[in-house]
Image (cartoon, rainbow, N blue to C red; front, side, top):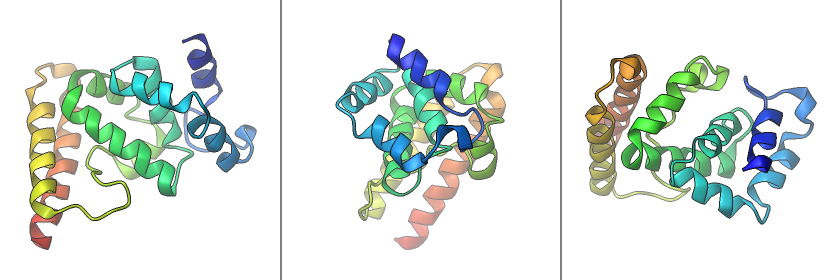
Length: 159
């Protein structure tokens, strides 16, 4: 994880930083490298440093990379809600999160999702986030649930 700590410390704390250089090249180096699968596995296993790397990459990513990161964060909302809330609480003032929210409601990876399946997934994420009982997370938890309920309403309107 030494390489992960170095990578995390090199990523901007608040969005795109000119010192990072060409953000497309930076993202390619990170998410198209042979280590990207290792990073992904660490994220979904709940490894804090790896999740923080994904959170910081939100400030650099767009298009496919953004969808990839958002879908992974959404998965964490359901499977590892406590650690995700803990990290999101730490990053709640991160410029990208302030502008765009916590990004826990994205489901698909560039394809259409059946509305009933989306409703199921979003409801499970709401249940998981709601199950965490710690007043420290209350503000972030409420924001995540609001984001998920808004996405749920969008899918219900489509149906």
